Every structure is written in structure tokens, then in C-alpha cells.
Image (cartoon, rainbow, N blue to C red):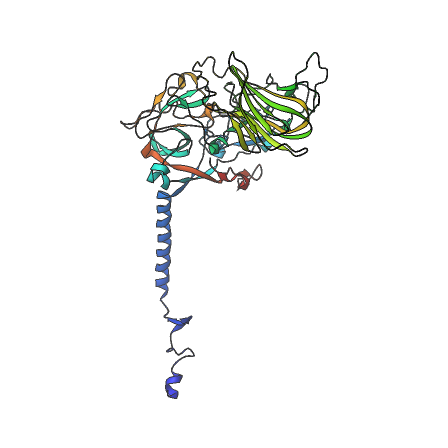
Length: 511
């Protein structure tokens, strides 16, 4: 190779005027090419975003409180000055779903101690509704991926396709839906909620960790009351006005505490802190949860629930024996099931949950179900009389014998109660099952007293498709399943600013 040839090339052996990136040479392009390339990249990204939104996932904002408390529309938050319970509340009147239209109610009701409270307007800054993500593609394929009972779905209003709604799906094509005493019946049988759906459909009744305090005319501090016996001057139960309840009765005398549901307040009823009035229906689907610590003794502790003419009890002994009993109307108490478990250890707490839910009674220990009734053992006839359904209060009692133990975190929760609203409820009311046709679905709101849903939809709508049946959701109007709250209600920074910061702690899956 000659000296002239070597000097006509650069250090990489390439002719002059070329630029290298790595081992390969790249020729410089004009600036116009870079502009066109950038435009092409942006357009491609926009097209992919529109395709993604149209077929896969779309974001929505919830304007109203028909799904409260599992999902919130525009709302405020209050902390009860008597018991410290924090809860969300809706506007005094229906709004457009905008924060600026929020009308603060004159009075609120704490769902825990039931004290009526005037909101502090200095801290009543409203928040916007939850922002959610909706899956579209599973429903497109149908079959096992199609809509399922208890899904939370978003769909278009047949009377106004530009308007979207979010509700809980309870009736599928071909189902016959009937709402009886707060429960959903499908084809004549009660429809039990999935564990995921049920986890967000429990509402507080009373929490012993949030005991009320205040003036003499305020809410009663003690709700669990010892049953006094004339022959037994010792109550056995202590600390009923504290967070930790003790039982010290090593003799064989049975001593009980009973939940006092008497006024003031609407205990054991379908009360929503989000609303400003309660329909006044007693809810028979309840659970009692407590952390129990055994100190001494070889006796037993029993949780009792009376619902209508039925009385149930779950008994737990220190040796680990669990027993479920029932006393039917006019009959004697019988043992339904007994199960030997691991013995209880002194000083080690165990979480006990006893409840009645969807015509089923169960006992859980540390979150695991150990006993439950079967449909053969317990199948109460549905009460279709609206004058009696929801009018009889249930009763709760805890009894102990020959034990020394502690109860911490004692709490009562109630299930959602799907109610009728008199003449406004035109579909699926007691005694009038609503039959769904092919391609039709039936939906309800979790905040049943204030939810416009399949019970009464479009009774006065003027512009509806000819093939549309009032109250139903057509299959072709379903957008998809709501699955995630990605941006919960936004917090006001102060009384003057409209800046918002997200409440990251409430981001969650939708169940």
C-alpha cells in the first residue's frame, strides 16, 4: 500500500466526509429528514395510544356516589369529634360531578357512633371522584372471560351513548332476578357474593376501638352491656367502656354481654356515612370480629346471633374444639358441626370471626373458615313481605364460662342491603322477579339507597332504541370491567388553592 493511499483515508480507514458510530459508517442526513422522522414517531405513538384505548384499557372518572363506599364520586371527608371515625360523605344534592358544584351538607351522621355532626367548613374541601382503569379486551372474547356476576362494569347509557355508568353486575342473560330483604335471588335461590366482592361490601356498625366520648347528651359510650342475673351479683365481664374487654369467671356460671342497638342511633341498620339519611332497614347479615387471648381456664366462649326466628351460636374451647349450633323456629337447639382444631395457647391471640351472610352461618379462626352451615341444614324461606322484611332487629351476644380471657378489637360489620324504594322500584321487587333475555344484564349500585340502577332506570326516558327493554344493560353497551383505582380522590392543599395531590394510599384493585 502506497503512502498516497494511506493519507487519503482517516484513522478508521474510511474516506473523508463520513461519520462513524461504532464500527459501521453512517452518512449525515439533512435536518428535514429528522423533522419528518420525529413527526412519524409521534403519529405512530398517537395511533398506538388510540388503538390501546379502543381495545384494551381506558381511563374514567367517577362523578357520583352510587358505588360508595367501595368507589367514590365527588366527596368530602370528615373525622367524627366523638369517636374519631374517619368517613367520606357525598354532596347535599345531586351534582354534575365537578368539585366546584359540591354543596356541603348541613349535617352529617357518623356511621360508627351515629352522632349527628355539623361539618367544619374550614376543613370541608371537596375531593374529585376516583379515577379508574377499565379492561376492555376480556369481554370481547366472551366465554370464561366474559361478564361474571358481581363484576364491577362500565357501560354506555342506551338513552345517551355519550354517558357512561359504573355499577355491579348481578344478573346475567336468562336469569330471573329478585331482591328480597336486602339479598339478590337468582332463579329462586340466593346469589352469594364472591369473597373478593364481599371484602368491599362490609360496612361498619360499631368498633370498640372507636368508643365515643363527649357530653352527657352525646352518644352512649358503652354498647356492649353485661346481662345481670339476680342470683349472680358478679358480672364477670369488665372494661366494656374500654378498648379491651376482660372476662374473669372461672366458675361454671354462664355470663353474657349483649350488643345494645337501642337509640340514639340506627345501629344494625343500613346506615351509610356517605348519605345523609338512612332507609331504616335492619340488616340480618352481620359479622362479629375480635382478637381473643386466653389467660386461664378450661371452659368455653360462644358467639351468638339471632336472626328472625333462628338462633345460632359458635362455641370455642381451649382444647381447640369448635362447635356450631342452631335453634330453629319452635325447635330445640341442635349441633350442626363439631371440629377438633389446634389447642389454644395461653397468651397467644386468635382472631375469631362469626357471621351470618347470604343464608349461611360461618366461623373463621385467623381468617380461615373452620365451620359453616350447609344449604340442607339451613334454608330459611325468603321473606317477600315488604312490611316485615328488614323490620326486626337481629341480636348479638357473647357468652363465656369457666374462663379468663381478653377481647381486643371487637367490631361489628354489616353486609350491603339492596333495598326497595316503594313505587320507584319497578323491577325485581319481592314477589316480582325480573326475567332477563338473551344479551341483557341487570346491575345494582353498592350505595343502594342512592343508586339509580336497573330497579328503576329510564322509566321516563323519551329517546330509546326500539329493541331496548327498560332497566337492562345490553351486551353491546358494556365497555368493560373496572379493575384498578389509579388516582383516588384528590386532596385540596388549602382553602384557597385548587392544586391537588393524589391520595396514593387509596390506590387499589376494584373488587
